[in-house]
Image (cartoon, rainbow, N blue to C red; front, top):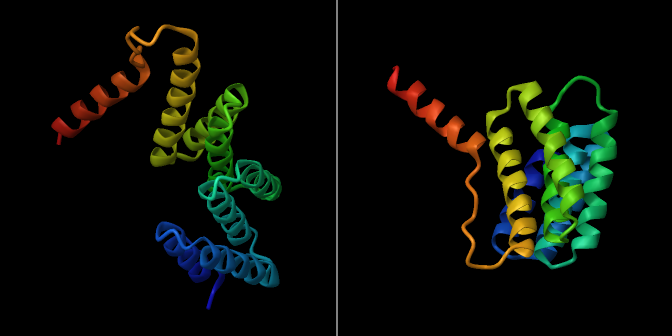
Amino acid sequence: MTCYAMADLADVHLAQGRYDAATDAAQRAMELARDVGNGRAEIMGLVLTGRIRAAMGNLAEARSHHEVALQIADGLIGATYPKIVPVLALATVLREMRELERARESAGRGLALARQGGHRVAEGRALTLLAKSRLIRETRLRPANWPVPRSPVIRRRATDREKWKQSD
């Protein structure tokens, strides 16, 4: 089985809540990736392992896996997408750990990479992470009955997309 198939299997097990099976499949995906020198697949396995650890409630271990994946990704030359995945995964865990400033920094880096590579889905995910981090911070600093501000950037982009769809 290839490293990508094992990673897909790990993802299925994770979705089913079968964390031991997911961990085994993710570890096997990383072993296969290392055996053939596939850094991208190794990153995928590390991010999956981090997601599994986060789902199990071990955010510190999840963070560690995402940071290792990011170190490997930073060593890759050229491609932006393999760098975006661990950056946004790290931002998600940092947000859950309530390290909001670092979460925003990581999401901001992910946003810049997504825009640089033209990865629209990743751009949307990064914007969502930035908005959620801001919302958590502002919710802690203001009374519960205050209205939540809407992001003019997200609203403007949504409007631009609707105009684009209508022009077809």
